[in-house]
Image 1: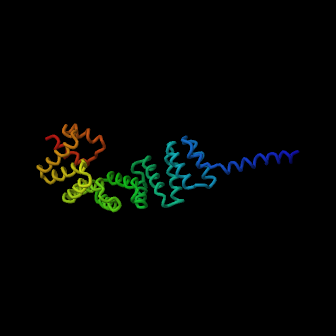
Image 2: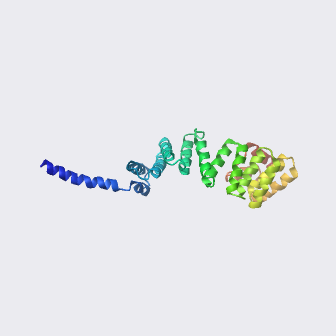
Image 3: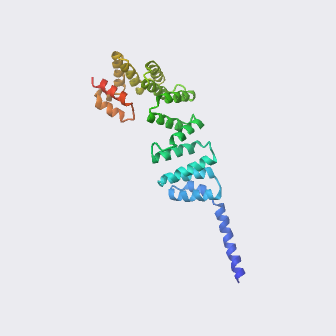
Length: 254
């Protein structure tokens, strides 16, 4: 009797084990939007040893959704152990680290590594750009933007960023050159127009500063409202250094 029971038990257990082995847990994780279930399914996929790097990456993303930032960092690190050239894992780990603290040790290194691995990836470029803006490290930002220009030639945004870097280092001739290139590439680039305004203002050429500021006002009529209009203008996402911010305010009060 006991033998028969054991045979029946095994006959029932073996199909269940085979079923468990054949389930595509990774796909089940992709098919659900419930982050708690995603973690469960991707964990089972990892235990099966299938799609390891992808499963760790997806579980990391799900852990972020659950607020488990350190767990996400650990999983992104596993991805990098499996594939040291996984750009997405470096980006994900950097962003996860920044959830803990904007200056979390290693976040900057991950951002720079992602750019080193894929310098044409817009996400990598944007994060490095943000990094240099945060640090106000113009000399290294200039080197970075010249590297970017190799892959994105005649890019008005990069030209404009270079212009502001040279403006900060008070190299007014190069600032004017790159702001002019930005306008040649994109005629209504308001950032570049205001950049040239600042070049002339800082060079004490008030006649040309006014001429370019009038162009900016024509392009963005809100600037005709003076400082109040300038504050409204900045809410659209335009950013200036403290020094440039004050200079533009002074010009707009006259």
